[in-house]
Image (cartoon, rainbow, N blue to C red; front, side, top):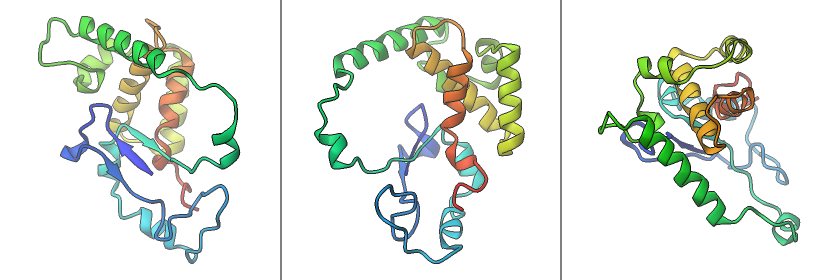
Length: 181
């Protein structure tokens, strides 16, 4: 499990890595977790809610099996990804041009989030359901909007679409009740 803020600096830590359980095999696609019942939840509960709130992206990383590694499927080329990131950074530089202390969406204040990260009524309904179902905090709400704005920037979209918002919500995996059993 890797946790990192969009700014690259969650709580001054840079990035945070933790296996999902003491044995390291919880949610592994091919190996069984050997931890006794309740141990995974206890292990994960060591990461406090306020700390998780300060981390923009919660990404569960599972091993890639041999078949996928050996497949002929073409992956997106790094230079295309790089170009997309450069364009998104340019959009953000233009967005924050009159504020030299800001370089990325992750640095927006709560008021800027309200002004810049406008979502449709359908988006508001989706986010409301997610907030209620996952029990998200106000800080998580702002982070979801910032991440969805960044996803939209990477997609070259001026508006935050439902799919951008849904993707940002999916990056809150550790906020999901029952994630660890």
